[in-house]
Length: 188
Image 1: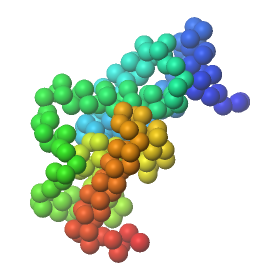
Image 2: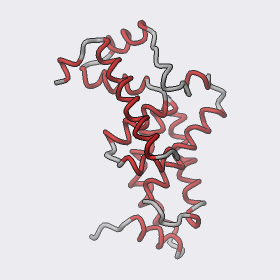
Image 3: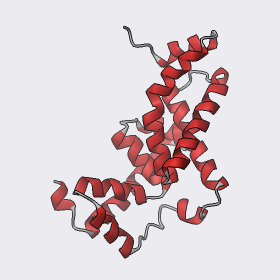
């Protein structure tokens, strides 16, 4: 069976084949859930936000203009849904939306995370989880999801230059956290 492109699936949905939306859900649910988990730090909240994201995308398919890839458009919806969930759940917005320069973490938290980790790679992933949402998101999209800087800039709705700066600063924060525990030798 030939694998359908996102555009072919969307055109089919627009022609009335609403059940074809399940193909898009299957294609993007895992990565979108992963992004939302990084933003919301909670599986239940991430599940709810994921459902909201797919509902918003489905209801807005008529406004999709093919100016960017469907995945970029959908991740933008997912990212914004995650941010809205943070605001509506009355979490400590200062903690979740910390500026990139405020990256000081409690020694106890880092030590506890390291002690609970089974291996170094798992620990690095947990460190990414501790980054502010935008910093974690840019690292995940670039390194794990292999998304281009241009696509990431569209998802985050920031300029390409700002995306590069955010990725650079996010890597620096992560590097400082790794150096703090002398993990650079183990990671080579």
